[in-house]
Image 1 (tube, rainbow, N blue to C red):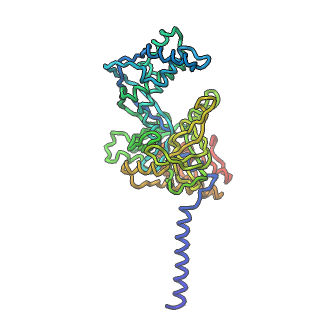
Image 2: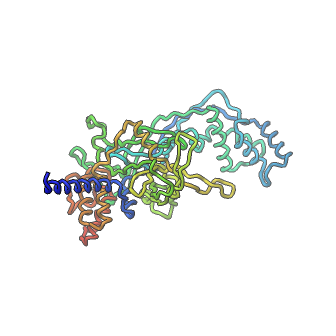
Image 3: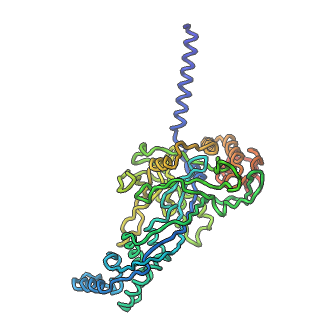
Length: 478
């Protein structure tokens, strides 16, 4: 073998080594920090689940007033009644602490139908419309949740409190009644005297409101896009149990009309969502920097923010504080400093590589003024738990798809200030996702002059910014 051949082979070896190294680096390279929020925005949805429940419970529930009176007199004799607490308040407090000891329930039962709505966050993970969220977000059929439903509780619990109020000749406050009702109802649940069945469930996904009225084309016909107002319908493929169980649910969108006559009911949903890639829980260490996404609808007070503010995904940065064991189906949870709120449940927690390492799930409360009212540590479900639920749903391989790949490339190019290349990437996405959520007309528009009211609003925003960075004149209103 001559020297020239050796030299050529050496060059080839170096080139192959560099190609392999570049590929590895691309997979392991941190995502531009200023683009992490933009990376997650289009993949995260607000999810609303409405359940029609059939609840069976005792026809009548009463309280043993003689036992309550004796218990109260014993506390008075031992000087254990708190100062300022009325007799009625003390009765209710006793009932709240030990409701099962004082309840008298009938053997015959009654059945009622109730509607319960839960909301939270979800995020897309595969091109076929696969999303992840918390089990407790889409399944408010947990019996303990019914204890917080005033309509359901009041129907069964009115007699005991009315009897107490009459016995002590005292009017019980609304808050006192609510707490007592919930305690009584929970006691019935523990004694398995209350059962519940889900009759019907509706799951809808919502994202950022499009800038303009949308149109979309499906099978050659243009129809008004109602998804912005009514949400994207979805169904549950697999679900664990609420925290501290494996609090994850796998969703799949079901937007395809039933009368299409196609074999694959998800055919038209493919490549209509920007997705997030999943990381590995085993690689997460305390101190890992994270971004937590979600829709904290309860954080917006009436009269301050516009109602559309609730349709914008929020993001909180922080870090993993510690990995702690749990008494439940989940072996461990991630404790984190990101300040999440009610409504953020089910939202993704991503690391510096833009990979999802967990799902928001709960907030540990800490004591304040004698009540558990102040927020404490935020907690996330490790992503490996979600992977096990995906496997249970028969999903063995996730495919983010070309929308996700183009979105990632566009953000990296934008961060590198290569705005011309970023414009092309985002323009191509607007073309590619024609007919996707937020509308768009397939085949209409171009990367150089698209319809500005089509495509994903987050993609469109970055497309417009890329043009502005290059000094492009944009149509009025964009």
